[in-house]
Image (cartoon, rainbow, N blue to C red):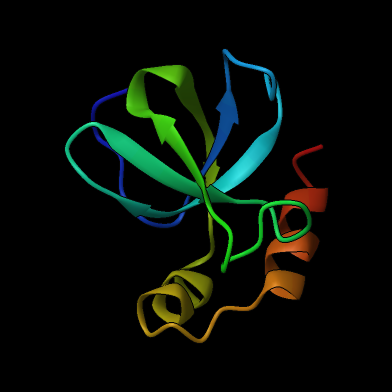
Length: 85
C-alpha cells in the first residue's frame, strides 16, 4: 500500500494483530502509526510497516480535519471503527 495518508481506515494483514481495524493517525516513508481508540490509543500508537496494511475506508472530512488539528479523541475513533467491524 503506497498512498498512505492520515485519516485512512486500514486492516492489518500480518503480525499478531492480523485482521484488526485501525485509523492511520500519522505516517512517514515506510511506517504508519495506528490507533483503534481502545488498546492502541492516540497516546500509545501502533507502529506498523506500510506493506502490512490495506485500506478499507476513510474517515469523514470533519474527522480528518479534527485529526490534523489534534482535536480527535479516542471515543470518536471507537465509534467510527464500529461500522467497519
